[in-house]
Length: 159
Image 1 (cartoon, one colour):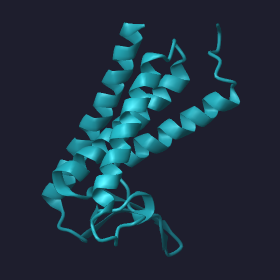
Image 2 (cartoon, rainbow, N blue to C red; image 1 turned 120 degrees about the horizontal axis):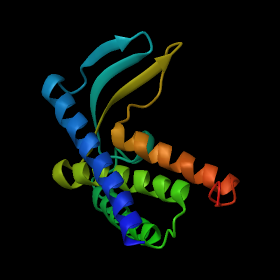
Image 3 (cartoon, helix red, strand yellow; image 1 turned 30 degrees about the vertical axis):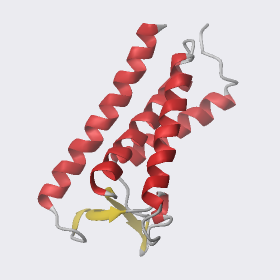
Image 4 (cartoon, rainbow, N blue to C red; image 1 turned 90 degrees about the vertical axis):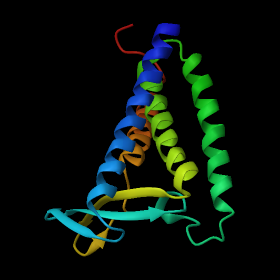
């Protein structure tokens, strides 16, 4: 059990490393608000989000920072406990590990800077999806895996 737990913690750590490396790279080449077109429907744009998903509470007076830090720490503790008790449920644990890594990547930003660095900008027909980052992508993929696991009844295939 400990070996499998270690695998999930390593996956979460890799998500944090990729997230922080991409944020470091983008802040080295773009200025805040600068937009660089990459593909017809994809830009790189450097934004700083003091709020949560979709900039929720980004214009609050600053009280949201300790709230989001506390929520991320609590979620990380709960997810780590669930991973420890995962009992070999690969899809479930992979989803949790991705969410844990994403939460820790964004938590790092909030503690270090007071905001989350976002830079991926997808758009079509004049509409832009809110900018996001690698941590957000990992959280979304992890949530999708948890939903898939739920539809499968939480059972492993082939065993």
